[in-house]
Image 1 (cartoon, helix red, strand yellow):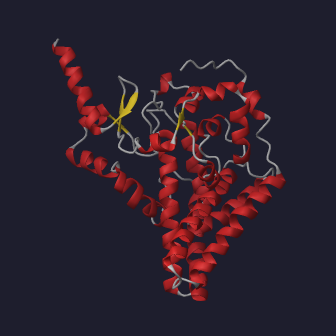
Image 2: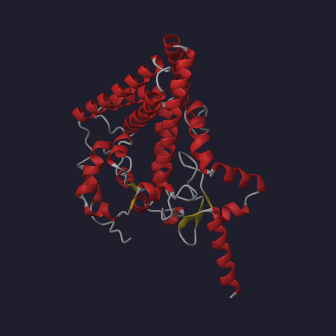
Image 3: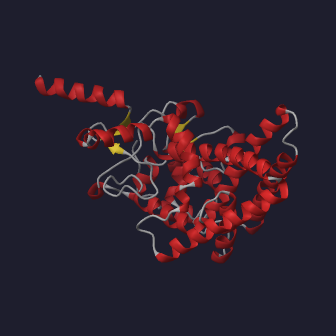
Length: 340
């Protein structure tokens, strides 16, 4: 892909980074009211027919994912004009997702500033190794990496562990304010859970909350994965790393059916989001439609995205993500070429 970086993209996109109070408020209404309605109905009607209960659990998870997109935009101070409003709404929605707003915002900012930089991995990123790093690692580390990169582990165990356990502990690099607000969020989550469980019953609370949170966390983890983990993504060493290219080539355009685009809050236009994180989610599709340079990014469809789940290692020579099997084939070809 030939991408022209001298197109005034900052100015082009900046006109869309202004939030619209009416659209933001309406998005909150048609996201949070259905979520609370579904959650409450399920809590008081768990004994109802499964053909109603199961679809409602999935629907509730969908609205929780959409609520997390609002939380995400608040973290970028893009959902409202007021920084204070973003912090208040972000903190409150964070309680629904068991996620500390200020700590998450700090980690996510690190992710945005270093995405695709091989020399600055670790904060807010999925653990990704190069083929060489994997081969040079001790056996126990390679086994651990294989477990972590297993789709069943990555989208099954990890999501719930992330939201229930990992989010309770601050990163070593976190500053005092992020640490304090993380612990306050954990206390608030426990207190809120106790109050709700007292009102609806402990069994009902655990079943409804765990079911919805597990599905939403798994969907969210998949979205985060496909946003940066695909075959032709972008990774470079710091001296060659470029922000524009990392955003355009290292952040996907995940083209989803309209209903999934709705529940994922347009986050599939991730290349645009990384170019300008101040653009609210409801302006992203319009940007994609208006600017031809954004359309140079090849979309990843729903089925094509599924095929990326087994990618695990970055091949620095071929500049692409490969599976463990693909890494072996790459090394075999390299060896044959050296012999020849």
